[in-house]
Amino acid sequence: MAEEIKASENTTDEKVPACCCRTKVRTEEEQRDLINRLSRIEGQVRGIRRMVEEDAYCIDIINQVSAANAALNSFTKILLADHIHTCVTEDVLNGSSEKVDELVKTLQKLMK
Image 1 (tube, rainbow, N blue to C red):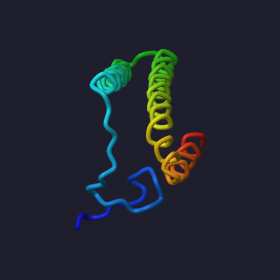
Image 2: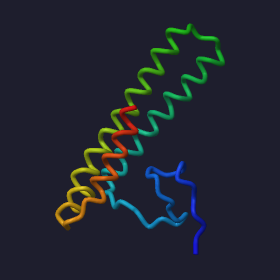
Image 3: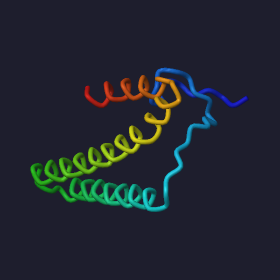
């Protein structure tokens, strides 16, 4: 049996097997959009690092950090909406509330 990972390493408070079978099938377009967004965010973070290395003005760096945070928040909103429309809806239609409970815990973490 696979090793368990610590609760702090996953999104729930439960121990999850390292080979967790929870996956999400996305269309090629959805996956491409998400990866493109992440690539832009990576570029922003690399740009911030470069600004620090080049001793850029503090406010200029802060403005770039703010833009990167906004991009991550936008990415999160897209994932969250998709999760609600697919995984959570399917779970509720099947008579379960497990995904709703998981979503509530995740939202509580996001809103700290």
